[in-house]
Length: 394
Image 1 (tube, rainbow, N blue to C red):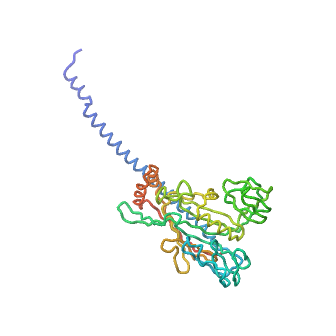
Image 2: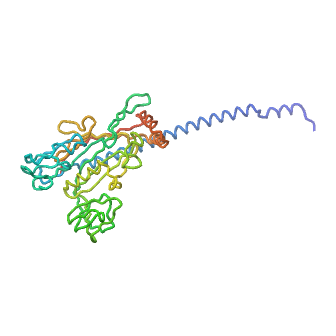
Image 3: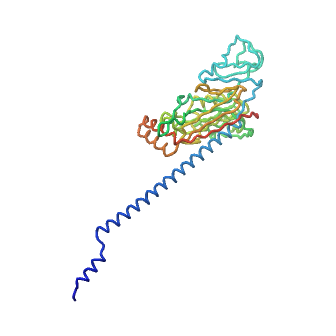
């Protein structure tokens, strides 16, 4: 067979050179890279939108929970109901406010004193009548609302944007108040079924925890974590549901409600605390607020419930008597028959991705770097606000 030069030329014209192949591969690679970048940006925007949605839903639902609680805020009408009350502007000095008790002093009816443990109203003119040994002369004044920053650091945190401009000054308050639940229900509870944080009344003499404290018939007590049993006989505890309830909100470590924010500076979880009381038992209300404020872990471990994560700001402000409380970054306690006219709340939630980065730094024991990082993330914080008038219906 003869081969002519024309046939070789036509065959060579149909072949693809290496240079052409490299150019084609490069173009396809650029197109794929551009498509991948577009896809990656789209995915990032979708993930950001999901995080923003979660943040808004968490903030709105949290504020709604607090709003439903605060709408029931009230004061306990003890035996003496004069309309008098008191505001203490320093929790550390509440044992001495508004006035220390003196057995040699004559107190006018309606006077409010403190005996070093609780606050009391004078039911009648009283001279040389001890507040503990003279129940006919004094009535216990219950706590109504407390705002404080003493459990965590009282120093506010200034958050900046990426350019260094101040966007938000963050506060970490805790909030405690009383509300009334009119649906009082009772249930006989056998030994072995005592639940932590639940309110009980002894129907006959019992000891709870076994071998520790004896309660006579009619005495009330709280269930403690790790102690489901009582001694003295069968079916002697009466569970109380309803009446007055003590509610508290606290920002603490994301791992444990009993740990302050020192593990991750300025970033934590909002917890809700609740204890039931029986009828208008002011003594048990002081017990509840003292346990909440003192952070007593032995009996309170299981009484906190997670409400919202990635919290960097929880500011509470009460307005009463044409004044704003707390004053100068301190704290405030309303007790007796005094409540604020309205309460204002602010909740700041941090983007979950930014929060995870900060927590990763803390896990690597770089707490200072985590704090410095958080202070520049003001753009990633969403603030929710609520102003609620207090209407006393009880």
